[in-house]
Amino acid sequence: MKSIQALADLSGRKALVTGGAGHIGLAAAEALLELGAEVILLDLPTPRLEECTAMLRDVHGNRVEALGGDLKDADLPDVIAENLKETEGTLGILVNNAAFVGTSDLEGWVTRFEDQSVDTWNQAMQVNLTAPFALVQALAKPLRESGHGSVINLGSLYGVLGPDLSLYDGTPMGNPAAYAASKGGLIQLTRWLSTVLAPEVRVNAISPGGISRGQPDVFVDRYTARTPLERMGREEDLKGAIAYLASDLSAYVTGQNLMVDGGWSAW
Ligand SMILES: NC(=O)c1ccc[n+]([C@@H]2O[C@H](COP(=O)([O-])OP(=O)(O)OC[C@H]3O[C@@H](n4cnc5c(N)ncnc54)[C@H](O)[C@@H]3O)[C@@H](O)[C@H]2O)c1
Image (tube, rainbow, N blue to C red):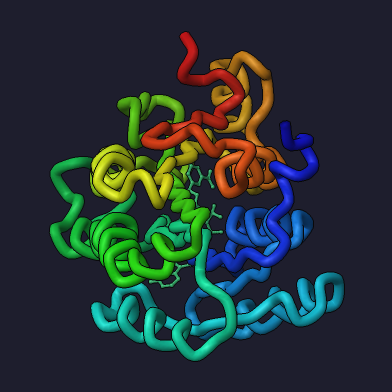
């Protein structure tokens, strides 16, 4: 029987993390690198992508690569697939982590239901649901051929449960329908892909609860009071789930949605 260390070992495996320069994306990349994988960070071509890549290279050397691109661009998945053909090694791990999360001042996004726009709905669907679908489709061949294919989709608590909008009273925060629907769709896409791509590729989701990011105190207090583990999440809380689902630690697990939410969804 293999040891836990051997099951967790990702040496020689190659991973692509979308939104790799984001908060959770960076934690996911770190987890994969610490277990020995090679990691490509895909994100919008911004200085932040360069900074994150340089920071990770300082620790993990040439096992880190960057790829700038916009997941709203329908051609991007094919460009990535072509790009990967030219690099050494077969892609075995895909983390669909990038998301359209909007901003409080984006028109038609964080506003009452009647004012949420089809335009922001479409943008959220494109990045959060259509892009993961297209990426898995474009990369299915290398994922299958890797011998250890694992796709991890980042869902959300709100892809599973309805919102309590009173949590946001008196804050500029909100919870748009499009975000919830796109994440619910991604979680169901996870189940669909898990049976269709089996047995070569495992497909699972991770659904985080709210991560602490300097939200207003009034929101944090309400959120914490409703969370059994009595705090908001941290990026670090996702590392174990990523390590588990990316590696052979979860070799017999597919089609699941792992809630990493401090117990929010348990009651
Ligand atoms: N932060 C939370 O509380 C929370 C809770 C539940 C789920 N999630 C999910 O976790 C994942 C990561 O969230 P985060 O908080 O780290 O977000 P983040 O905003 O810090 O990172 C998202 C990254 O995606 C990139 N991105 C966005 N649109 C893109 C596009 N069109 N093309 C390429 N890259 C694009 C951004 O540049 C950013 O680096 C998301 O899927 C999010 O929905 C987050």
